Image (cartoon, rainbow, N blue to C red):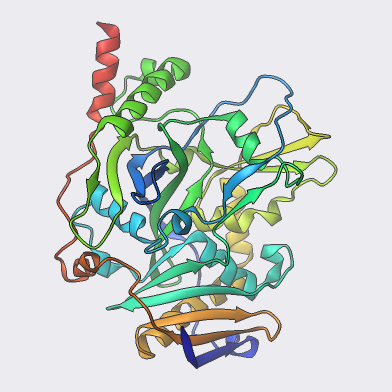
Length: 403
């Protein structure tokens, strides 16, 4: 439970933050990724590196069913409530066993950064100020921001109408991993004198860009996607599952293929008489550096053929035009880390929308990660060395096809 507040950050305090001279995202690197796999709740399972779903829309207008049934709000917390951030670290050390976590200042989900930006300027969140909570833990000089939601999943009744977002994605994309329920990516970048690890969910990707493939084969999208699909399904389902030798129940499999950031996309659906302005989604694209966007519109449930927009240039221009907000965001994130570190290392950061202020309180309870992962800050612990992920299996599959 949260204790007596150790700090309060008011709107006036935001003006006095120590902000950097500029606040642009630089040195962007995709580090790893994973898919959640449908499995018993007693054995939460991820496949690394996994794969986003392949963008493959119908050739003509179509009418998907409305969204019903079970949907995730925060899948990491729903599937692994004891440690929602553990999958990020397990995927990271599966792909990069010697990664120096002590070089990172902030580890967070995209959602946390978006909420803090909405506090600074509600324009970037539908002009609404809403309560939110982020739990923060500082180890050495690294602050881990853990998303805290009142609900992590929900059930949409057949009598309810909440749009077509989920069924649209299923209709327009093709899963590359057997049993996948969502693809998450982890990237690193510098922002406002801080080094970040950011996790975010990705809706899909366009085309196929795989290392070592001959150009004439890589351009044959349909043939290659079938090979990759078969490969990914077998790799994710047949390789043995590894549960790390620590106080964790998370199981990790190798499966899938790495997809470059340049191919990833975000999907948004909307009724045609309420077009989605890019200003309403640009902050989300900026945080995750997602370069492509699908804005799909329907009229009485019927969608026209959707198209993929390259919005990287717009996102870059938005960053340049909103340096005031972004400098304040960088200053606020740095201030939160400092307050939590000086206040004992574990805290709950709650935004009170009614009083327009952040309240930082000490946080008790268990630590956010399994014990072995804390050894990584000292260069030890953290399970077995797994080596680099094997991309040569793609070449082998292609050679077998040509025999």
